Length: 216
Length: 216
DNA sequence: AAATAAAATTAGACAAGACTAATTTTATTT
DNA sequence: AAATAAAATTAGTCTTGTCTAATTTTATTT
Image (cartoon, rainbow over all chains, first blue to last red; front, side, top):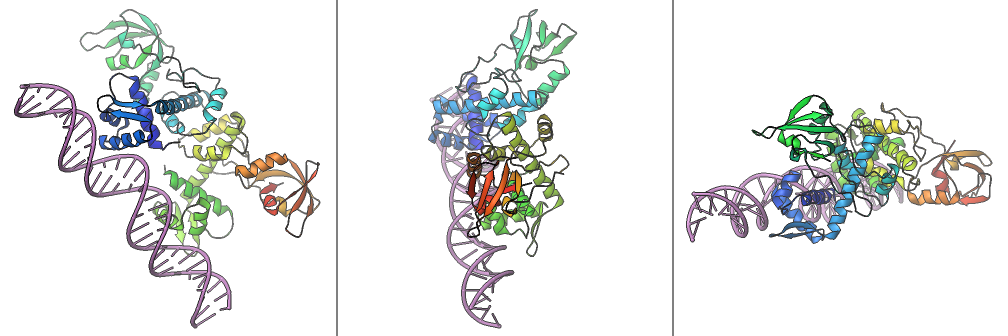
């Protein structure tokens, strides 16, 4: 299929496309930790391969083919995450980096077989929907904990940040997918959140924290 | 750990070291389908990293560290092959190339977890012994079908060639690990073998075929 | 609108790992 | 032992994907 780099660019562009606003070379560079000059080169390459279109006004956009390829990579990543957690017993803070490598293994039927073996999971261990073979997937969760009304109660549906720093912090706080959280108070000074985890003790977390928890 | 190329060289050298005779740059080049000039470069690189030693007289040898690393790659390859066959339902002619990619995924505990998940298999689907975490493994099978006495009966223990061309041929002949074969006759003209598969009809196969079947 | 800042782009360099062609070294014949 | 063949090595090139530094373009301030 494509080189490792090409796939990583496709994935980065796909992820950026989920947010709003146009996708600039600088944004891609930041997302991949690369230099913008390198990104310009790769934009040229992927454009020639008809996987993206680049227009100074509109920014970078995936073509239908590019989108299809990007979604396949995401599909593989998320399926492997389920495998690592459920079958091999990893914790959710350990699986991202390994899946980052596994996702590039390309075989006609591998993802489909893995999906079947795992029982056609809908969501990965971080709460992200797993694309089906046809590219369709459940709608991602989008409401953040920080956006909830004071006093309301919700359940953790997904995490935005999948860094092990964040996930280990959640582990320490006893928060996982499905954990019930009540938003007790918003501190107006710095938008900190006072929350109650599973009806237990009150804890204060930062706004950044609240922005990275998606609830339902 | 190492680059993809470095790992592939280590693996190739390991495989060649199982045979007899010294390991020359040319042999490595043939084994990887590379140019000898490229091999010379990599020999220099791996020597600097103390993974191999190269002496014109003795040829290439793995250092203790190089051997350890090579065995780990082989371990990962063979464990993934078991996974692909037993858990994902691939046939044995389809798994080699995928395992060739999976084997390079490096994680502290991945191979150990996979091994446990698979129930600590001793042999892979081609009959090759799977190295344990400490590097030890069962002795590989070494007696070829071609080396058997006329009239004797044996069981297929392993295959030397893991190309899908060979494995598909075996599939067509209904030969797998454990299949009983009787060596009915050796044709002296070209060393062809007349065999009886599972006590059934007689079939003639080439010497090359007989050299690639290991029996017990 | 001019000045300034930010973003995008170009030009040129570099490392890895492959190649070809030429040369040197080693091995094998005659 | 000389001639020849084979293997090993060197030298130089190429591609991929990155980088830095310099320049140009676009956006934002004042």
